[in-house]
Picture 1 (cartoon, rainbow, N blue to C red):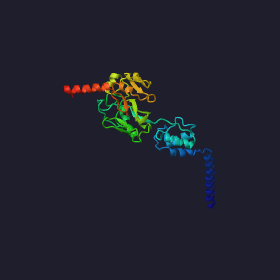
Picture 2: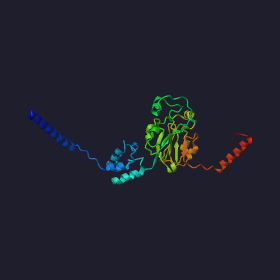
Picture 3: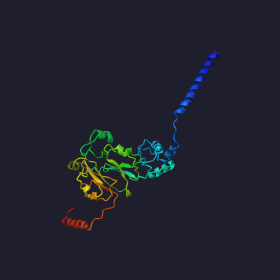
Amino acid sequence: MSSIVLYTLLTLSSVGALAAIILYFVAQKFKVYEDPRIDEVEAALPAANCGGCGFAGCRNFAEALVKADEFGSLYCPVGGNETMEAAAKILGKEAVAMAPMVAVVRCGGSCDVRPVINKYDGAASCTVASALYSGQTGCQYGCLGLGECVDACSFDAIVMNPETGLPEVIDDKCTACGACVDACPKDIIEIRKKNKNDRKIFVNCVNKDKGAIAKKSCEVACIGCKKCVKACNFDAIVVENFLAYIDHEKCKLCRKCVAECPTGAIQEVNFPERKVKKEEEKVVTETSEKNKEEGAC
Protein backbone atom coordinates (compact mmCIF):
# COMPACT_ATOMS: atom_id res chain seq x y z
CA MET A 1 0.00 0.00 0.00
CA SER A 2 2.84 2.39 0.87
CA SER A 3 4.54 1.64 -2.47
CA ILE A 4 1.38 2.64 -4.35
CA VAL A 5 1.21 5.95 -2.49
CA LEU A 6 4.90 6.57 -3.12
CA TYR A 7 4.50 5.72 -6.81
CA THR A 8 1.53 8.11 -7.07
CA LEU A 9 3.45 10.93 -5.41
CA LEU A 10 6.46 10.42 -7.67
CA THR A 11 4.26 10.34 -10.76
CA LEU A 12 2.42 13.53 -9.79
CA SER A 13 5.70 15.27 -8.93
CA SER A 14 7.20 14.28 -12.27
CA VAL A 15 4.14 15.50 -14.17
CA GLY A 16 4.18 18.77 -12.21
CA ALA A 17 7.89 19.29 -12.85
CA LEU A 18 7.48 18.53 -16.55
CA ALA A 19 4.51 20.93 -16.81
CA ALA A 20 6.50 23.65 -15.06
CA ILE A 21 9.40 23.21 -17.50
CA ILE A 22 7.04 23.32 -20.49
CA LEU A 23 5.28 26.44 -19.17
CA TYR A 24 8.63 28.13 -18.58
CA PHE A 25 9.79 27.58 -22.15
CA VAL A 26 6.38 28.64 -23.53
CA ALA A 27 6.49 31.82 -21.43
CA GLN A 28 9.99 32.59 -22.71
CA LYS A 29 8.92 31.89 -26.27
CA PHE A 30 5.93 34.22 -26.17
CA LYS A 31 7.35 36.74 -23.73
CA VAL A 32 6.26 40.29 -24.58
CA TYR A 33 8.90 42.93 -24.04
CA GLU A 34 7.58 46.27 -22.79
CA ASP A 35 9.71 49.33 -23.23
CA PRO A 36 10.39 50.84 -19.76
CA ARG A 37 10.07 54.30 -21.31
CA ILE A 38 6.32 53.78 -21.56
CA ASP A 39 6.05 54.14 -17.77
CA GLU A 40 8.13 57.33 -17.87
CA VAL A 41 6.05 58.89 -20.63
CA GLU A 42 2.79 57.88 -18.94
CA ALA A 43 3.97 59.58 -15.74
CA ALA A 44 4.53 62.80 -17.72
CA LEU A 45 0.97 62.74 -19.08
CA PRO A 46 -1.93 64.39 -17.17
CA ALA A 47 -3.64 61.03 -16.37
CA ALA A 48 -6.99 62.42 -17.52
CA ASN A 49 -7.80 59.33 -19.61
CA CYS A 50 -10.29 61.48 -21.51
CA GLY A 51 -9.65 60.07 -24.97
CA GLY A 52 -8.99 63.50 -26.44
CA CYS A 53 -5.75 62.23 -27.96
CA GLY A 54 -7.66 59.60 -29.93
CA PHE A 55 -6.58 56.69 -27.72
CA ALA A 56 -8.44 54.79 -25.00
CA GLY A 57 -6.32 56.27 -22.23
CA CYS A 58 -2.99 57.81 -21.26
CA ARG A 59 -1.28 54.39 -21.16
CA ASN A 60 -2.25 53.64 -24.75
CA PHE A 61 -1.17 57.11 -25.82
CA ALA A 62 2.20 56.66 -24.09
CA GLU A 63 2.73 53.39 -25.97
CA ALA A 64 1.93 55.13 -29.26
CA LEU A 65 4.42 57.91 -28.51
CA VAL A 66 7.19 55.44 -27.70
CA LYS A 67 6.58 53.38 -30.86
CA ALA A 68 6.21 56.37 -33.22
CA ASP A 69 9.19 57.51 -35.26
CA GLU A 70 7.94 61.08 -34.90
CA PHE A 71 5.05 62.67 -33.06
CA GLY A 72 3.31 64.07 -36.14
CA SER A 73 -0.40 64.26 -35.33
CA LEU A 74 0.03 62.66 -31.90
CA TYR A 75 -1.00 65.29 -29.39
CA CYS A 76 -2.38 65.51 -25.86
CA PRO A 77 -4.95 68.34 -25.80
CA VAL A 78 -5.18 68.29 -22.01
CA GLY A 79 -1.47 68.63 -21.30
CA GLY A 80 -0.80 70.79 -24.35
CA ASN A 81 2.60 71.74 -25.72
CA GLU A 82 4.29 71.61 -22.31
CA THR A 83 3.36 67.95 -21.79
CA MET A 84 4.36 67.02 -25.33
CA GLU A 85 7.75 68.66 -24.83
CA ALA A 86 8.26 66.65 -21.63
CA ALA A 87 7.41 63.41 -23.46
CA ALA A 88 9.69 64.36 -26.33
CA LYS A 89 12.58 64.97 -23.92
CA ILE A 90 12.15 61.49 -22.42
CA LEU A 91 12.14 59.84 -25.84
CA GLY A 92 14.77 62.03 -27.45
CA LYS A 93 12.33 63.18 -30.10
CA GLU A 94 11.05 66.53 -31.27
CA ALA A 95 7.64 67.83 -30.19
CA VAL A 96 5.44 69.65 -32.67
CA ALA A 97 3.92 72.76 -31.11
CA MET A 98 0.23 73.19 -31.86
CA ALA A 99 -2.11 76.12 -31.37
CA PRO A 100 -4.41 75.79 -28.35
CA MET A 101 -7.98 74.78 -29.14
CA VAL A 102 -11.30 75.30 -27.38
CA ALA A 103 -14.84 73.97 -27.68
CA VAL A 104 -17.44 76.33 -29.14
CA VAL A 105 -21.21 75.91 -28.91
CA ARG A 106 -22.70 76.89 -32.28
CA CYS A 107 -26.32 77.52 -31.38
CA GLY A 108 -27.76 80.90 -30.40
CA GLY A 109 -31.34 79.72 -30.16
CA SER A 110 -32.05 80.83 -26.62
CA CYS A 111 -35.54 80.74 -25.13
CA ASP A 112 -36.37 84.31 -26.16
CA VAL A 113 -35.55 83.89 -29.87
CA ARG A 114 -36.58 80.27 -30.49
CA PRO A 115 -40.18 79.73 -29.35
CA VAL A 116 -41.12 76.41 -27.78
CA ILE A 117 -43.97 74.78 -29.72
CA ASN A 118 -44.27 71.49 -27.83
CA LYS A 119 -43.30 69.89 -24.54
CA TYR A 120 -40.88 66.97 -24.27
CA ASP A 121 -41.81 64.49 -21.54
CA GLY A 122 -39.22 61.74 -21.60
CA ALA A 123 -35.75 60.70 -20.53
CA ALA A 124 -33.47 63.65 -19.75
CA SER A 125 -31.02 62.63 -22.45
CA CYS A 126 -30.17 64.50 -25.63
CA THR A 127 -29.41 61.21 -27.39
CA VAL A 128 -32.79 59.73 -26.49
CA ALA A 129 -34.71 62.92 -27.30
CA SER A 130 -32.90 63.31 -30.62
CA ALA A 131 -33.80 59.75 -31.60
CA LEU A 132 -37.47 60.29 -30.79
CA TYR A 133 -38.23 63.66 -32.39
CA SER A 134 -36.80 66.89 -33.79
CA GLY A 135 -37.06 69.00 -30.66
CA GLN A 136 -39.35 71.33 -28.72
CA THR A 137 -38.95 74.19 -31.21
CA GLY A 138 -39.39 74.70 -34.93
CA CYS A 139 -35.65 74.25 -35.44
CA GLN A 140 -34.74 70.60 -35.84
CA TYR A 141 -31.01 71.36 -35.79
CA GLY A 142 -30.60 73.34 -32.58
CA CYS A 143 -29.63 72.47 -29.03
CA LEU A 144 -32.05 70.26 -27.11
CA GLY A 145 -30.93 71.74 -23.79
CA LEU A 146 -30.81 68.52 -21.77
CA GLY A 147 -27.16 68.90 -20.81
CA GLU A 148 -25.61 65.67 -22.05
CA CYS A 149 -22.51 67.66 -23.03
CA VAL A 150 -22.20 68.86 -19.43
CA ASP A 151 -22.29 65.29 -18.11
CA ALA A 152 -19.65 64.24 -20.63
CA CYS A 153 -17.12 66.89 -19.57
CA SER A 154 -14.55 65.69 -17.02
CA PHE A 155 -13.18 69.16 -16.41
CA ASP A 156 -16.33 71.12 -15.43
CA ALA A 157 -15.67 73.29 -18.47
CA ILE A 158 -19.24 73.42 -19.77
CA VAL A 159 -22.41 74.46 -17.96
CA MET A 160 -26.05 75.01 -18.81
CA ASN A 161 -27.21 78.61 -18.68
CA PRO A 162 -30.62 78.57 -16.94
CA GLU A 163 -31.69 81.81 -18.64
CA THR A 164 -30.89 80.85 -22.23
CA GLY A 165 -31.31 77.10 -21.88
CA LEU A 166 -28.05 76.63 -23.78
CA PRO A 167 -24.68 75.18 -22.80
CA GLU A 168 -21.77 77.57 -22.28
CA VAL A 169 -18.07 76.72 -22.43
CA ILE A 170 -15.70 78.07 -19.78
CA ASP A 171 -12.64 78.71 -21.93
CA ASP A 172 -10.12 78.70 -19.08
CA LYS A 173 -11.18 75.19 -18.05
CA CYS A 174 -11.71 73.70 -21.52
CA THR A 175 -8.99 71.27 -22.63
CA ALA A 176 -10.46 70.65 -26.10
CA CYS A 177 -10.65 66.92 -25.34
CA GLY A 178 -13.72 66.64 -27.58
CA ALA A 179 -15.89 64.70 -25.12
CA CYS A 180 -18.72 67.23 -25.43
CA VAL A 181 -18.45 67.11 -29.23
CA ASP A 182 -18.92 63.34 -29.22
CA ALA A 183 -21.77 63.58 -26.70
CA CYS A 184 -23.88 66.07 -28.70
CA PRO A 185 -26.25 64.26 -31.10
CA LYS A 186 -27.02 67.54 -32.90
CA ASP A 187 -23.36 68.29 -33.71
CA ILE A 188 -23.61 71.88 -32.50
CA ILE A 189 -20.30 71.81 -30.58
CA GLU A 190 -17.06 72.26 -32.46
CA ILE A 191 -13.38 72.39 -31.54
CA ARG A 192 -11.91 75.62 -32.88
CA LYS A 193 -8.62 77.48 -32.58
CA LYS A 194 -8.22 79.46 -29.37
CA ASN A 195 -7.16 82.98 -30.32
CA LYS A 196 -5.44 85.64 -28.26
CA ASN A 197 -7.63 86.92 -25.40
CA ASP A 198 -10.08 84.09 -26.20
CA ARG A 199 -11.51 86.09 -29.08
CA LYS A 200 -13.84 84.25 -31.42
CA ILE A 201 -15.91 84.91 -34.50
CA PHE A 202 -18.20 82.12 -35.62
CA VAL A 203 -21.60 81.44 -37.13
CA ASN A 204 -23.74 80.71 -34.10
CA CYS A 205 -26.16 78.51 -36.00
CA VAL A 206 -26.31 75.06 -37.61
CA ASN A 207 -29.76 75.37 -39.23
CA LYS A 208 -29.74 74.10 -42.82
CA ASP A 209 -33.30 75.10 -43.68
CA LYS A 210 -33.97 77.76 -46.30
CA GLY A 211 -33.81 81.35 -45.10
CA ALA A 212 -37.49 82.04 -44.49
CA ILE A 213 -38.07 78.71 -42.71
CA ALA A 214 -34.94 79.10 -40.56
CA LYS A 215 -35.86 82.69 -39.61
CA LYS A 216 -39.40 81.65 -38.67
CA SER A 217 -38.16 79.00 -36.22
CA CYS A 218 -35.35 81.15 -34.76
CA GLU A 219 -34.87 84.92 -34.94
CA VAL A 220 -31.06 84.67 -34.97
CA ALA A 221 -30.78 81.84 -37.50
CA CYS A 222 -28.44 82.02 -40.47
CA ILE A 223 -30.50 82.56 -43.62
CA GLY A 224 -27.73 81.87 -46.12
CA CYS A 225 -27.86 85.36 -47.64
CA LYS A 226 -24.09 85.35 -48.39
CA LYS A 227 -23.60 88.95 -47.28
CA CYS A 228 -20.85 87.72 -44.97
CA VAL A 229 -19.11 85.97 -47.85
CA LYS A 230 -18.98 89.20 -49.83
CA ALA A 231 -17.68 91.13 -46.82
CA CYS A 232 -14.81 88.72 -46.11
CA ASN A 233 -11.48 89.54 -47.78
CA PHE A 234 -9.79 86.32 -46.71
CA ASP A 235 -12.04 83.64 -48.27
CA ALA A 236 -12.75 82.38 -44.76
CA ILE A 237 -16.52 82.00 -45.21
CA VAL A 238 -18.49 79.54 -47.30
CA VAL A 239 -22.23 78.96 -47.58
CA GLU A 240 -23.46 75.41 -48.12
CA ASN A 241 -26.99 74.09 -47.63
CA PHE A 242 -28.22 77.62 -46.79
CA LEU A 243 -25.76 77.81 -43.89
CA ALA A 244 -22.63 79.96 -43.57
CA TYR A 245 -19.47 78.61 -41.97
CA ILE A 246 -16.33 80.49 -40.92
CA ASP A 247 -13.01 78.66 -41.24
CA HIS A 248 -11.16 79.46 -38.02
CA GLU A 249 -7.80 78.83 -39.69
CA LYS A 250 -8.42 81.46 -42.37
CA CYS A 251 -10.36 83.99 -40.29
CA LYS A 252 -8.34 87.11 -39.36
CA LEU A 253 -10.91 88.36 -36.81
CA CYS A 254 -11.56 91.55 -38.78
CA ARG A 255 -15.27 91.48 -37.78
CA LYS A 256 -16.56 92.81 -41.10
CA CYS A 257 -18.85 89.81 -41.49
CA VAL A 258 -20.39 90.45 -38.06
CA ALA A 259 -21.59 93.91 -39.10
CA GLU A 260 -23.05 92.55 -42.35
CA CYS A 261 -25.10 89.71 -40.88
CA PRO A 262 -28.79 90.79 -40.95
CA THR A 263 -29.93 88.31 -38.27
CA GLY A 264 -27.03 88.49 -35.83
CA ALA A 265 -26.15 84.85 -36.47
CA ILE A 266 -22.44 85.66 -36.54
CA GLN A 267 -21.08 86.12 -33.05
CA GLU A 268 -18.04 88.07 -31.90
CA VAL A 269 -16.78 87.16 -28.43
CA ASN A 270 -14.32 88.97 -26.15
CA PHE A 271 -13.77 91.93 -28.47
CA PRO A 272 -13.65 95.56 -27.32
CA GLU A 273 -16.69 97.70 -28.05
CA ARG A 274 -16.80 99.07 -31.55
CA LYS A 275 -16.04 102.75 -31.96
CA VAL A 276 -19.07 104.65 -33.17
CA LYS A 277 -18.35 106.97 -36.07
CA LYS A 278 -19.04 110.67 -35.50
CA GLU A 279 -21.73 110.69 -38.21
CA GLU A 280 -23.52 107.73 -36.62
CA GLU A 281 -23.19 109.24 -33.16
CA LYS A 282 -24.69 112.49 -34.44
CA VAL A 283 -27.67 110.65 -35.96
CA VAL A 284 -28.26 108.73 -32.72
CA THR A 285 -28.12 111.94 -30.67
CA GLU A 286 -30.53 113.80 -32.99
CA THR A 287 -32.95 110.86 -33.00
CA SER A 288 -32.85 110.66 -29.21
CA GLU A 289 -33.57 114.37 -28.81
CA LYS A 290 -36.40 114.20 -31.34
CA ASN A 291 -38.00 111.26 -29.50
CA LYS A 292 -37.86 113.22 -26.24
CA GLU A 293 -39.60 116.18 -27.83
CA GLU A 294 -42.33 113.94 -29.28
CA GLY A 295 -42.71 112.06 -26.01
CA ALA A 296 -41.68 108.73 -27.55
CA CYS A 297 -40.64 105.85 -25.21
